[in-house]
View 1: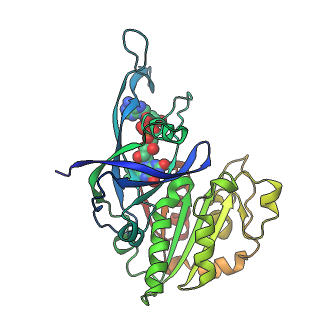
View 2 (view 1 turned 135 degrees about the vertical axis):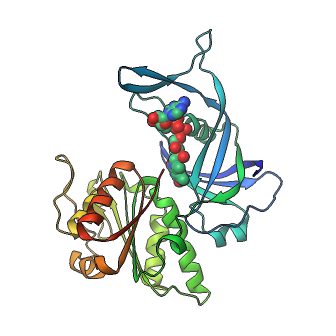
View 3 (view 1 turned 90 degrees about the vertical axis):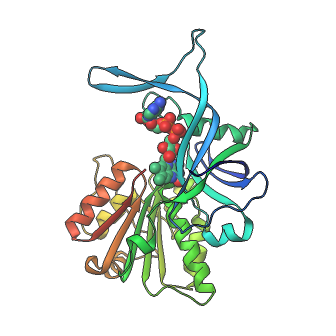
Length: 306
Ligand SMILES: Cc1cc2nc3c(=O)[nH]c(=O)nc-3n(C[C@H](O)[C@H](O)[C@H](O)COP(=O)(O)OP(=O)(O)OC[C@H]3O[C@@H](n4cnc5c(N)ncnc54)[C@H](O)[C@@H]3O)c2cc1C
């Protein structure tokens, strides 16, 4: 069985109150296991605020688990997280990177693990244990082999595995081993500051070391965003819908607009459903719609379940 090791969070980068990128290093500088872009690892915090399940009729809710004195119980919680670092970055710097959102349930109850993790941002204890095993089959090798074109569609922190893949492909291209296929990344978050890896993705696209196009978008645009030629407007699934001439989902949805430097005709030509595998990761509703769109277009579909 894989061992639980102690690490420490370094370089906490706060994108918004509920969204961060951070790095993990091992406490004793031990090397992390090697991995492929798209894989994940289990992380654990010991002082999580625990919840318990309550059943009301057919409805299941999770509420704070209180001790006899009315204080919320603390304990360990372990969850999986995709690596947003690329394998070459880990090999160079002996660190792992993550792109994480602070979970907030319907009742406003914060996620057990992420509430504890985000306390690090306020100067709290920075210990973070990890299971010394990196796993998962959401890799280009396993999910995209044999396809001319790989279309990656990410919502929110679902960008993490794709950020790892794109950085690794770019690195390999720099080493003279550019991938043969074409890659298109469509990703959206609520606001511009929350678009983690945005600058990096645009930089890789501009370098043209391999055939890569990225289509970033925000679903809550400001006037700044509407003036940004390289930024689209709308949720990832709705941008994808507009490429395939499908109506946007959700009556209140912002009408999708492509970044002005990525004409929709160019994307329509690039994304030939017969030659494309669509990989998606992110929030379950968006993924379900992306699955529907892929089905409508007869496109091979692969997803990472969170
Ligand atoms: C392979 C994989 C990769 C992932 N990668 C990422 C990533 O890169 N970035 C990211 O932000 N997230 C990622 N996730 C999601 C992550 O693992 C967590 O589920 C998420 O961060 C919420 O954890 P939490 O403890 O804060 O919330 P939780 O407390 O676990 O709450 C989440 C939901 O679980 C339910 N719940 C609450 N309490 C309990 C309980 N006591 N028992 C059972 N269920 C309960 C509720 O429905 C709640 O809405 C990934 C998940 C998987 C499986």
